[in-house]
Image (cartoon, rainbow, N blue to C red; front, top):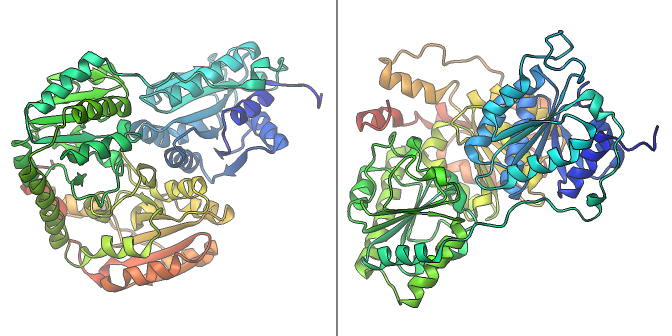
Length: 553
């Protein structure tokens, strides 16, 4: 029996053939043959998380940082359901996540017979939250189903794909596919743009002298073309998930400073607005009430993106990097340059937006500069949903590369700790900082033991305001200041660090953040830096200001 090649062996070899080096999750009765095969092959590192939710978020962050496939294994039924939040977030973020789960035996599946872990329509649940979901129905179809699932996860628009493999089929013998000898996933080549459409786009831009870009997650590989367009005088705005496509110290990059009143006034003067690889989603446009420049073009690989949020005068169904490169070729051939006065306006708008936010933040206004100076340039910047991230973490802290950024795109609290672990494992030799609020940090606190166990080189920067600060600000703005159910009695973070066996430091003054971080980041492995927000001072009422301006409701 030891020499019998089974579907479980195929799963292990298939993942290795896909170039997967690390997988995450929990061993269970309904995935044990597959994880046993991975262990026996000893070619893939398996990171055992404390829960499926944490393992899923680790795999999600891993996929974002490596720019490839993240893999998580869960058990069946309740175990698969525990990973729902992580899969939903991966779908928000467009992460190439492959979720492999078990299923009760084919004899009992979908029969409602009460087999262990059997839930009604698990596949339907997975289909509702994933880009797509499949069940392996026989040993002979396992290879094809796995290929289709992994290829779909990696095909733009990328996203999470789930695969169920019944437990009896995991153990079933199967002939090893000959295709595994020279294996390559059937991921389609990037979609080129129609040359005539690119000519029309170049005509649109060349008709004016005040062009701007809005780039999203689908344009993360368009850095070279974007730099060429910036050299011609374009302004660059991004979604938060599209940040870092070019280093954000560039004076024409406004990045996620994309929806203030001053920026909206500036939009009215832009005569060609090119949106690429972005949903321009309601979360970042005041539920689509923000007025974008009137003359718009959109580039997206998904034809369904056409008109989904904002209309466009020209829609090009193509890969963003190829299309923007084609646009740059045409404009360079025409010797196109934006108005020099316009370029100076862009630079001044950037300066004023940065200065306004720093001023608003009060004692927290120096945090981005202190952190950037204290951290290596290639640090991976991970953020949970916190007041600090919503304000300056998503905007002021400058990024140098799109793969340096991981945050909860779906705005769910509590994923930052696990995201930080997955990001650190994806980036060996680099530093990872995961900024969390105390509320989110304690939500998945068990995974801090995974960080220690795996020696993940991650610093947890915990902004401690003794409760759900984000929620309390919203309650202040909308519920008459009644902060019901938003305060907690948590353990001291110093005790948590001691329990986990990691380095601990505390920041009690705003001006010492950089020094404490610079010293602590030198320690290999996981560490915890607590920022005592009560000692530093109250965080400004950001949400009250947003409600007053009509940006939150």
